[in-house]
Image 1 (spheres, rainbow, N blue to C red):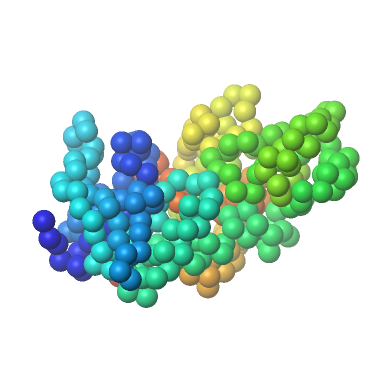
Image 2 (cartoon, rainbow, N blue to C red):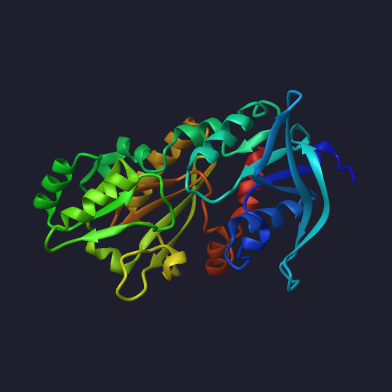
Length: 312
């Protein structure tokens, strides 16, 4: 089976059987691409190669359909020269590990022939948490370190703190430390993760965070995610409930500054998060999520904005 080069969207992602169509942004973007008459070629990062100077992927052409019980149908398996795609979406889940980095180097080889979203060089260079260091004036007190003494000093000053791995995702391995400092926990945490992010705890997280969608350098929409009772994690994968919200003027101002900087750094699609009008330091550029949830809450289809912006 062959398709016109100009009408193929490649999606580099985890196998569709692992996705939840009710909330998955990759499926949501693919469905809109199909409506625009693109064919979807899906492949796993491990199936990416450079052979005879060509970037090849073993994968399959696939069709998504929300109305079917099985929301996807594999049409044909093949090895595709990815330079035949019009667009490629980097959509595999973090963690941002060596395999992730390797795929960005491979896709760098064709990024001048194919529009890759997000730009693979930018995905590699824009560390989702460390990138926020340039915007620390908009954040709660935050340090990035693996120095135990610096962590202890930080805790002594703020009494309650969040510690996070720099390269993790979806609220995994995040600890709230308050009361008595468990030095053994911190020591083991640094041994496991290396440099970590320590942040003053913002108690208003119980009312929810705000996820802002940035597309093509512009604020495109936002949702709030309210942690389940007894939790401080606002990730929907951790049981948080999404609700529709509006941004404050402060949040709009900060989002606009970051959006311009992301566009300058060739990041087309990203998600940034606020807690109590403060940037929480997670600037998602690897595989931003939430567009399907935003549509379900507002009936506004940001997948249309996403594809329209690429054609501009």
